[in-house]
Image 1 (tube, one colour):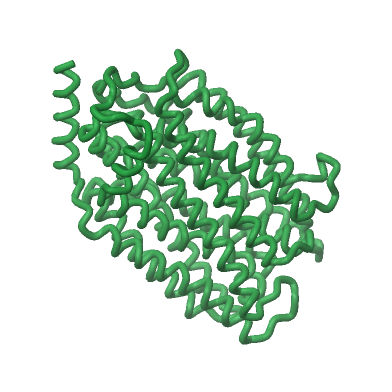
Image 2 (image 1 turned 90 degrees about the vertical axis):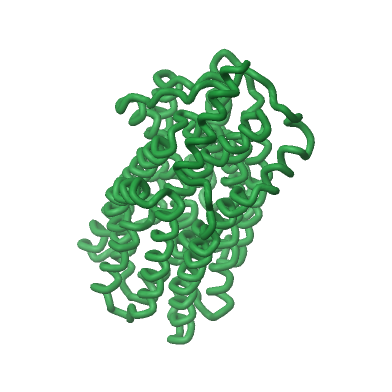
Length: 457
């Protein structure tokens, strides 16, 4: 086990974090803007779109662990993670164009097969890029709070990327509203695609050139890394299971809210012209959230900060039950509060995964960072699939129809799913993290033992 790599300089850490710009910019529109676009504008319906997103997310859940395991074993003079990122880049760019702007490829009205095929390709490329990036971020420093700092940079960059990509549809909505028209969804998605592609090319090139990977572990595992043993060790670890289950709950709550946000603001509150603007407002305040929760984590420790953040998010989502049609001021206040807490669980859980990777490295002698992060991503994808694949069809089954004149009962059902689903999920996440005992003191002992092992090699 090599010594913990020194902390990156501020400029290089900032360059590395820019990878979150396009990855966040591509990920959230998949949950927020594309399902309504394909369900309503392309006429595929909520049930079909929900099923496609759920099945393709399941495909991504299969590819993530494979990428994680193979990237851990990759040995090249360029590093372990960089070749995977570079290899996934062309397919990521092409599938982004195909999903966001199929008209560029000559398809005016894409159907279910087109959406399913290109979403499958997108998630394959996403796995090839995202798993190595997150593993690289976890390896870039071995310090307990240093890892929170790296994740803070990533969360701030993700929020900035989301802010920039969300400005585009929000601006289109406002311009169209002043002209007494409705903005064209096709144009919104095209603008987002341009942003994603340009920032991906720039951030990937600069990170691959300017940021070095840490040195490879100099010795083999005490036990084999092949076969089922690594999986049994990972899923037999109580702390890993706590993190994975909590991450599933966090992501489920966030994406139930995200997938229904446009419908709730447009149909229930009655302000379709302000849906994108409210989403933008949330991410403006999300930029300030990561540094706030970094400070909370320094004070309380990572898992306690995550529990606090989840309980606050539960309360915010319960507050949505008080929003009434036309009740815009309360919705604004809750949106701001959501922005200020949105990064709490995500930030801390990602930093905690790296600490558990150190613990497992001490126990096995092998570096399983990529495999651990792929398991982490697996729960996120599973939660995304459930959020889109259950929340949308459930709303449809209870009578809500996008773009139609809905009954009061259907709108109430939409509101209950939108508020109670995330509230329950965030409460569950907080409960799951109780008893997580890998704190700063425990992690310091692990790092000392790892460095002692290195000295004995």
